[in-house]
Image (cartoon, rainbow, N blue to C red):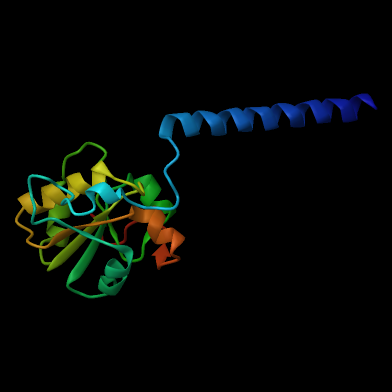
Length: 169
């Protein structure tokens, strides 16, 4: 084998091994969620926020039926960078990176009759539940959490878009 081809083959092998190692490390860190179910059936009747039973779950089909209604607002609890890569069509970015709610963002949802929060976890998402809790504490009466989050929404090929939040301050 010519030296140049041998060098190329060795470099390709190194890249392959590095990719496999990175993939395995991510699997260990994040864990592998079961793909056959987007939620834990043992807790399917429990409210998303135990201390606030008025906050309810909404499944993907129920959320799809709400999408596009002027009185309904979808809010994305994921970091802004992730939101810009792809989000539910028309959703507002309300990142929960710090676990606190930006007061200027509350004004964007104050007039909504229903607010649906979601994040990037398909089994459970503390960020979307925290966002729902904070919005309910701000006085919004119909706050829901999308069961299955953005992964389930994507898998079902429901409407998405990418780019920055056009209505955010």
